[in-house]
Length: 226
Image (tube, rainbow, N blue to C red; front, top):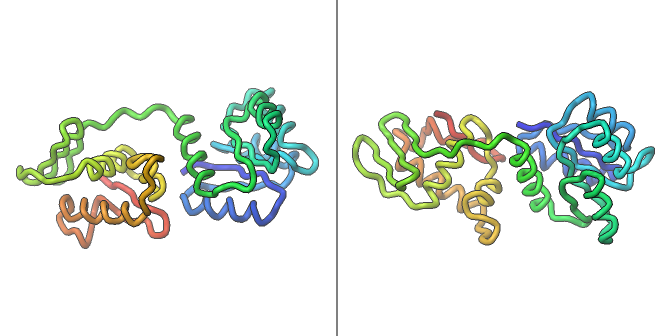
């Protein structure tokens, strides 16, 4: 779970972003002006900042300038109604990592947040093999056995399992699985993820109706438990 600071003076947008981030199991801290934001950045040490530009007391530009001057490298997504190229360039030059213009797609913003958080984390070692109960999964050869008997699994099922197992214990959202396994160029529905999880449970779990490893986190997504 990551701690995310949302700095936005529009209470409707602030509440909507906070709710969506909380649904993805993030800890959310909020501020509605630039001075409060600077204080929270130092006190709370968020993992990522969503920063509106047009703020009372201290603009988003100035917040970005101050924290970068102080050596704070927390990833920043700038959020603003301004769409001119000069504004985007200035924000990025001041140290922002990404830039989203209002009105924006919440789903796209959440994907950008996930991408920045991944880049900020140490690189994960690729998972080549998974063993649990009487199951052995070889991700390099796309082979799996249960009790020594070969399992018929699709490449997408291998992909879903590999991603969940590489983040063992963490909650992974359906949208994140879609982005990571299916990619941005293909956008199936979240029901596609549910169907693949059901198929994996049927093939891998001792009692599919009472899974011990592929767990549902209701309203959010799934978690792999070794």
